Image (cartoon, rainbow, N blue to C red; front, side, top):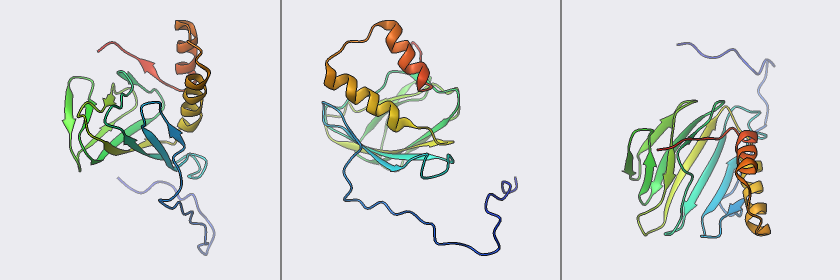
Length: 165
């Protein structure tokens, strides 16, 4: 396999790096205390990828089995034990474990360990998951309960297809 076609064609390089410090607050926090840190948004990476750090509380839940049609997703466990679903089986992932899910690959995650856990989540190409998480946050804050059709519409807008496991 060779390198992709060049995207930068100028003769000289440029100072264009972007820095995000660890002191920046999370972009998303659930009612159960899970924090989503938006490390690199699709807007920052020109759509190449998006990267999040997911700091799960001891009582954190997670999405039910689903797949995406347009993006791959990679999960890398930083600490604790994260329960991952690979489309066939649930398993405990430990620090250093990685799961790559191509487009169409069924997956899910949760924290059932009773202790905090964290992982990196990368989507490629980049996807505007920040908008999805913002919508979930607004929904939780409003107390509004969505109908099945409203849930289906929300998931369709954010390339999430739920499946039975």
